[in-house]
Image (tube, rainbow, N blue to C red; front, side, top):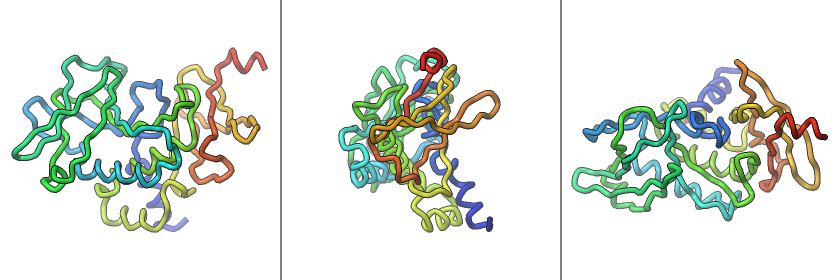
Length: 248
């Protein structure tokens, strides 16, 4: 494999980080690792500029045919299984103004669209100490913690690529422009299965197929087949547990 393609594979975790790497039930792996800003309002370098978040919103509109009924939300989750700290507050700030962004009890929030704020280089600012992660969250009505929809994962990929690509190095961006990252076999994205689950079944076109999994350090992973056209957007990947598989 030449160095160009090695670079494309290498940037995939940087581009999307753990946004698609884990089960919705795993509190540590919802999203890109973001350390929150301090209470003094100093912006953390890992938060993306508001203008970058708008690019993700644009990508959602462009590719929402993958999940036409799923709203675009973002989610903040604490690391290491901690509960959300009471009083957690998110704001969009520029030098002259500040807009509050409500955070729901489950950690989700919806960003407003304001090009004027983006033009002023506004930033997202969280008011608590370090220890939080964030991601786009795309969930159709028939998705659940134990049934992952293919179209939701494709749309989430497009949103996260749009948000993150400007923060890549010049060489990484050049490599990215050579491919369609959310449909390329050169981009390897995985999700971790929930604890105690032991099997994943792809349900599509009246079929039920067992999906190949991999294991690393006691954790089980599923490589998301973004590049495989045999799985339509309505494909559900159903998580199985030992009591379910034993009953078959």
